[in-house]
Length: 123
Image (cartoon, rainbow, N blue to C red; front, side, top):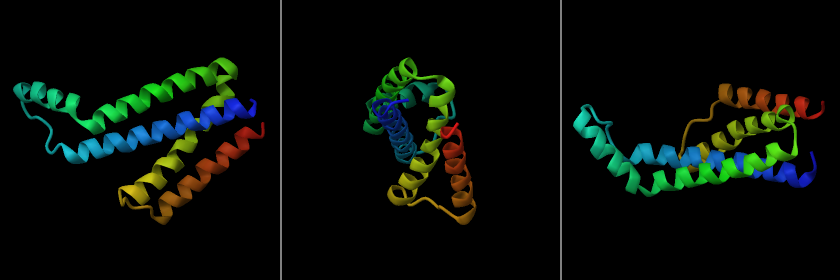
């Protein structure tokens, strides 16, 4: 995998992480989920005009397009492990932007994820 493809793969993973954060912000802003069939339509209409929803979906679409380019240029067994770095990126964004907890257990798990990525990338 050359450096351009690697950079595009990381950009794709980063955009997916941002999409996750946007959708988390969406869910924090909308209140309770609908409890009836009538409420589902109103809920979906509210989602369609919510800026966090639109941003999250657009980020996913752009990330998907970049990922297709990566898959065109490299083997899936080499590219897909890079997506695991999204766990680390999302945890960092969640901690700094959403004030989410990042305790020692999570940090240890993230360490092993990153270690696994490094081991796979050496193969």
